[in-house]
Image (cartoon, rainbow over all chains, first blue to last red; front, side, top):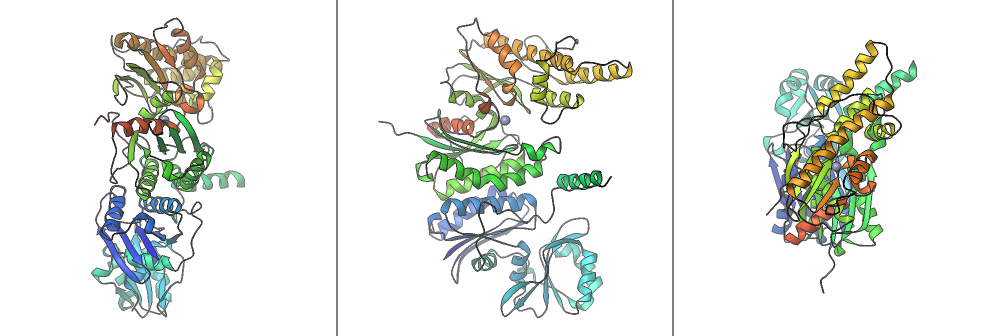
Length: 235
Length: 340
Ligand SMILES: [Zn+2]
């Protein structure tokens, strides 16, 4: 089964073409540049280089977030439109799961992939490989790094941290977790689109029309509106 | 025999997710619009992040509905046209990336369209265009006079220096405590009142086709505040009528002068505010006895944002061989000129 995987949820732009157990091609950049301009040309180039037509594709897999709202939307919009118009299945995979899978398969402990979410916050979750399957032990969420490390302290096991934004939070993590904290190697910090493809290959297909990004957060205006309507109801 | 040409259009520049299919540049085969207005009403205006989220929810549903209505598949389509700008960047991005994906999947030409060119070309879905033509574009974000020598050639000869007419309507509606969107409410109210309140008209310097509505908007706000301070009541109907009279008088007078100065054959009304009854009536009356000018006013559903108008521009650009590659981006500040 030929799978096209698309990840534009964070700075890393990743495209992979995978056929069953063969990684045919991968395109990865880790630069602060406009995804909207570059994703489709990257897909076009990768398919062309791999002598694959859009009609040859049999499944689309997309990183569904968390991440930049705009970034996730670009990937999800392209993935939904391609899957729908080519009439092939679509699966969404957590952007954090992709990071975890990119680094943690030989790690004896739990994995905490993370993306910086500004103001001392991170998007993170807790994953673990068991019999070479990636398990999601919590749900992806937004948290203050200091709160997260306190929660991890309660689990008495080594934790592997993964992600390009590690540098922002490394000092805090080291200070709180000491020797229990491990950090993925530089070459493992980019979420690998081939990992995304493999994770999505085995996942159930979604209803394409109803599929939306996992933003984690409500839009700010929506959150305020809910807060305000709650207030007026309780009065 | 020339083969029929079918263009699929996509529009997501603000709060409508729209897809349409048109035949030979003029005939609407399908025109689907999913409006988000109910969702934005509670915020008193369009919230960009929420608009973008709704577009992602609606995009493939609206695409499918349009193709189903037309009983077509992508094999029947010659090119995909999409609003490239101007508009809300996050909202535009959804349409642009959906258009790129669908064009790529079926190896069809991709055409980026200027939103205002779309509003102008809504007229071509009603009547064939004759040149030179002049378009009066009035919407929430635009107030422009656009001169057209021929298809695809746009020259902005006048534009607003501050607020767009639609913006002024929304702001005045807020002063009068009307729900969003305010324009239609003012229009309705204006017909119940009389223009008894003196409000300014911004003519600007002699010969200018530019507009300015911020002074008028301030005058309305001052009138309301002064009346409040004096404990007087102003009939909202009369204020609405007076405001509308000032806006329309300036729009119609400047349009008439431009029509004469540029010696155009056709006058096209375009944009969301073109749905305004007062404006439609004033233009119709002004040009009633001018048989040399062909006044075209699109029906209401083609004045507000839709994708048929985007496809209509796409049809002309397709004929001219203008298309984009996969690196097309949403451009919130796009210039209307697209001449190759
Ligand atoms: Zn518009």
